[in-house]
Image (tube, rainbow over all chains, first blue to last red; front, side, top):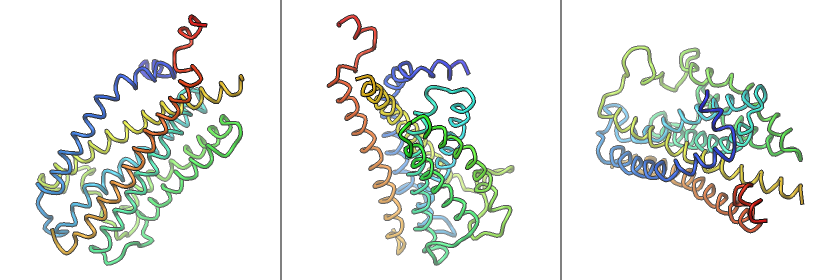
Length: 239
Length: 53
């Protein structure tokens, strides 16, 4: 918590971000280079899915990060509404488009996997529908935060949407257990051991790590931009 | 790869276009904001600006 308070000051956050970004960029590029090699060339085809398992190496990490991104929005929303954290609104504005893009990638790649495996691009199944709802929640957050002339009002309205919409996260996670769905149940995040062979698990985890680094990188860069934009707005008001 | 290669390559193309596009857009927005700050002399910390004025 002390570290979070340290970063509450936008100028201090900016210095922290500028110190971290070069190393993070290098790690992301290296992560993707190795991850793509493992995912496209090194890993064997799955015994059931065949070569289409390679789509899972981008689909699953984007699904995880779109959900993690929305959980981040909810935490930032609570920080803004309860503690009036000065950086929370700016970071939420920065993170929402990143999460929306990961949700879009998840939906599109899942659809491209579904066509050869299920015989259809889309079904109104609980997992797919709740994931589509998550994408719309992201779009709502982006629209709401920019809908008012007073940015503070927009940020507060978007924070409430983020908190209310967080109810969708457990629905996405447990939809495959609560309802009969075409989507397969969890194969990695289970109480017992993962149901994935190490030869498939390794590239999946590597790509997930690379996606996570890219997510952090994009949120840091966009938060810096939001801080700069807010400074320009304040300068315009004072002029 | 296989007869499914069109789906696999399309999926990776989607990732490249969406996430690559977002990365480029984010970096160019940051450069634009920094240029505007620099043009108005707001790119230095407040204390440093106060010393020079």
